[in-house]
Length: 247
Ligand code: SAM
Ligand code: CA
Image (cartoon, rainbow, N blue to C red; front, side):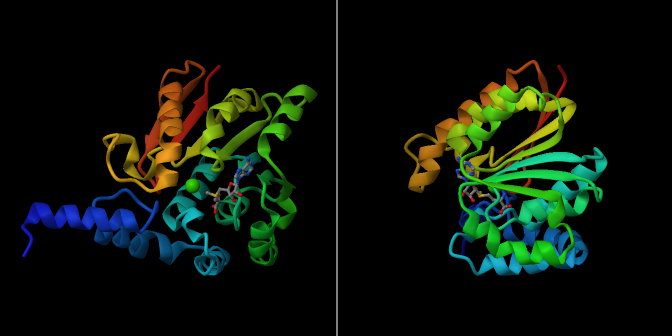
């Protein structure tokens, strides 16, 4: 039988295999959070979308239920109205956002894949929040460049959630810092990158984890050194760095 330390190690290892859902030290602790505070309060449409997404082959990409609850709370706390999301997939974080916004709230939502967005769309429509969403199919960067060029979008967003191609996060940040309002918030997701940010370079890692790791490390350094924002890195989901623009 494994001693306590080994047992904890095994638990942590197994837990990480669950895949990007939590960096907590044990499955039991994470389940406790889900069962005690998240699932009992999860809005019905979010539950439906979560269950639908669980059947999809790329379900590892979805935002976890606890992170969805966190985003929903954060948006309400900051009274967000005009928001943006980069990386939609089937729309779990999008729905968490849409449900938090007032009736006239807006989400500019971008993803290169419309098909996955359309999987979740009927649930979003049934929830009565689809009118808040302006979905754009395609890479996000050119849309941001267009908005910067237009001039009229500078400092207009209350909240921006970035959850797409990690190798572009720095490029997104260069643009988003102009588009978010002073006092507004940008959330960069997966900033603990499956715990790999502290793994030794020769540690075994899935190929995609290894590929994006250096980009995440670079982003984390850049955010910590950026005087235009205040930051807070939270171990929710796969790590989310909350940035509040201050200048
Ligand atoms: N926020 C989503 C959720 O709650 O389920 C998860 C997003 S998933 C981790 C990342 C998404 O980013 C994928 O759906 C992918 O198609 C999209 N993506 C990848 N590269 C992109 C790009 N250059 N511009 C916009 N979206 C992109
Ligand atoms: Ca994510």
